[in-house]
Amino acid sequence: MLEIREVGIGYLQSEISLIKLAFNETDALCPTHESMRHKYDDNPANVGAMAFGAFDQDRLAGLCMYMPAWYQFGNMKLFGVQACDAAVDPEYQRRGLFTQITEAAELYYSNHDVDFFLACTTLTVHSYPAFKRRGLVEVAHCKYAHIPLNISMVVEEKFSVKLPQFIDDVCWAMRLRLLRRAKRNKQLRIEKDRASFLTVSGDYSDERIRLDIGQDVLNWRCSGDKFFYYTIFEGKRAIAQFIVKKIGVVAVVIEHCFFIETVKKRLEAVSLLAKEARVGGFGVLSFWTALGTPDMETFVRAGAIKYDNSKHGIPYMVKVLTEDPEKAAVLNNLALWQPMRIELDTVIDNFDTTKYERHFFR
Image 1 (cartoon, rainbow, N blue to C red):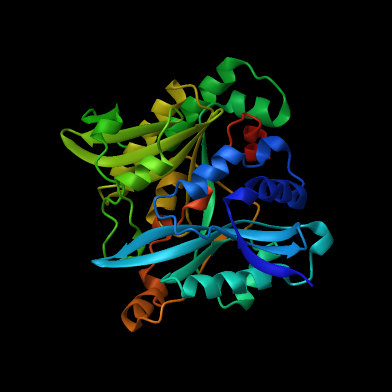
Image 2 (image 1 turned 60 degrees about the vertical axis):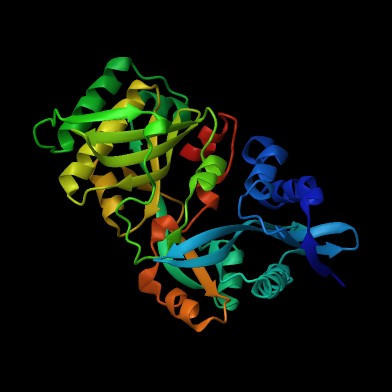
């Protein structure tokens, strides 16, 4: 008989080993002890219980980790936990362990003033039907969108074939022409300076549910020499901001915010960021964003290629836990969710090796 119980920080190495075993990952693609401790234990919203596991005596047979965060809707504060880093030992799969773990976590968090439960998973893995059985509903679907900045670098990474530099230069020139941009906006400039970073909420309305990203959360998620803060100005007015994380040759946009609504201005801002990234030696500029949104439309028009293993993207799923009727009414209204302002897991994972690039391009 397996026992479901809370798992503490002392089990981190066992959890990492289980993730590696369950997904047949290399050390390069597995989280490290340091990154997992940062991700969960250093989280400013840490509430103590960071994981639940299934144990066969002393053997960890399955687990799911949970990342807490504060959210906001107007003046309403909401507290949620996101299921992350789930794994079941292959010897124990198809026994309903993940469903049992999820049920235990829901019970615990519903008794500890957590308002809702959030999950992000692919449609093809076993956790998806388990979350559906537990009553989680989909609020958004997201994909990566990649803008190739250096074609020869991408080809070399994916196919181990080295192209002449002039081919890359020609491809880059053609891509700029395909943007169909208006005449170069000479008023635009880009500043690479964290001190000038204003906000990551921007024109995202307070009438939508989104992460409450204060300075403490920014310091936790986006500090260190791998992160770059960019603000794009038109004259003296900030029109867009981006936080970029360096993962080998890939520049991953961790946070982005537009302060203007016109497609043309947004397109100019993304194009300027792409140019800055290419000059900085990156091969790809990557965005993680929701399908069917103006942001995704902007990235695609700027030359991005939508990429993911799933045709329909990765679903975000939510279950309301609170018994507060006012909060429940807000959380149950699917139209109120701001897709790109609700997720932490995808963009905070720390892969500190360039071997991640091969995983990224596969």
